[in-house]
Image (cartoon, rainbow, N blue to C red; front, side, top):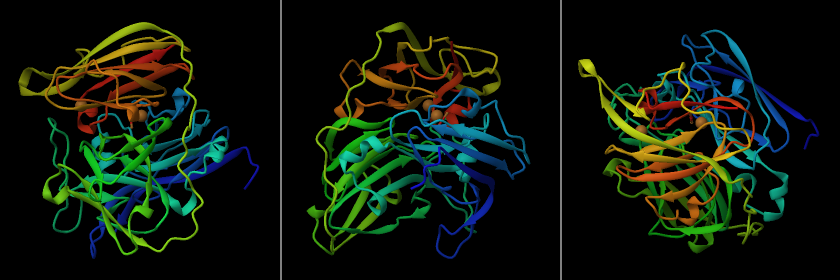
Length: 421
Ligand code: C2O
Ligand code: CU
Ligand code: CU
């Protein structure tokens, strides 16, 4: 345990090879050439600096998804690191403990770079959570869920689908196909991240066993919530505690994707072995509800699919495509606002806001499920539905984007820009 106030990392964004299908080498682009990239562990109140060196032949940048950062370190799509150059990113870690991730955000090309492998976990801990006795160390397991398709030679196969976004026929967890994990009969914390371009999952454990959700995008919920099925749109995070004492030694417990096609219905398997002494417990209350200022503005964002002259078409927010030159709104620093996402299309849009978190006020006029009542940065807006959120512009002023996190939609060009003043 060091008393350093600062943590420094150096990473190379570079091509690499991954053995994903047994016996094949898959070319990837990754942080330090690996997929997923290295997990960063940060502590609240201690700054992390990451020098990112772009060792590829394309412009890239790095976005800490869910992170509170000054705008110059946020990875705005137009703020690129040219090929061969480097950039120092500073993360102050001022927000609540939470499961974050970092990924590329190159303008109009995120679907390709994310697909190629530029994604990794960033786990922000808070020593103030220690009294909760949540599972730690080997029992705290980040699981990045993605989908891919493969060519015969083992390379990734991408097929552009502007309408639905990319859907692969194979599910990967932490870069492995249907992995098996040995678990002891005790409590585990599993941190799910959907890092897929556009595929949504409905996670179910074994034959509908309980998972206890303790956190969402923005960190711990006020209190744990029992769930049998966990829907996850792209970029969402869900932290659960699973009590493997409910299974006998020797059980093989499958994590399913309910409703997936046959090839995408199994996600991974847990093989239960004899347990050691139990140290973790399931807390009753986790986090006090934050007091928020009354909203001082209301905005409505229609989400549409627009046919363009020449047969092209794009996704849009608020009746316009993304332009660096356009600022869609100017919220006041320290304020909250009410934002209404109105989905006028027949596709789901996981809507995401950079730099700040929000509370979900209503989903189609109804109070959100308790598991959706914590801090969020991404929320599913289903076809023809309306979701009202309340962003809190609490930290740094400046220019940030908000967008659909179906990567193909965000690239083309379902993205807006705000300037918090
Ligand atoms: Cu994962 Cu613009 O974000
Ligand atoms: Cu983000
Ligand atoms: Cu979308």
